[in-house]
Length: 114
Image (cartoon, rainbow, N blue to C red; front, side):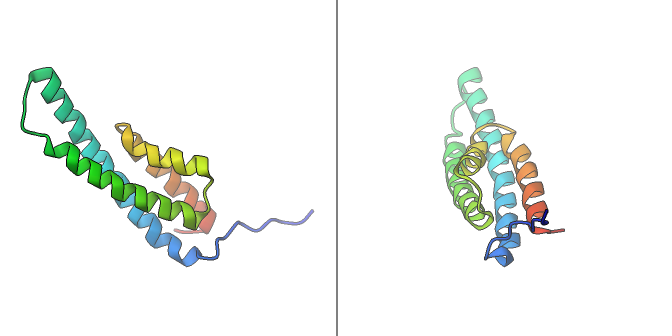
């Protein structure tokens, strides 16, 4: 039986930068999503107004997160399902932190990063 070498994308040198950008945006998206949840609780639970800008900021941050997620997915050659699941992680509170940890571990293992 022959040994299988790890799958390495032709642009493996671009992986560390793409991974760093994805990780940073995953955390920023997760934090802004928690702010958005706080805004919703304040608005609908306590009738507090004036925080409408939180949703706008989270929306734009999430958009950038999607771009960096797809960028990393293309470089790491993720399946469509894995890419969509990772992209959707920015819409559920706390999930972006967990998925970021899992994807970072997978990519580091796949490409032999420290």
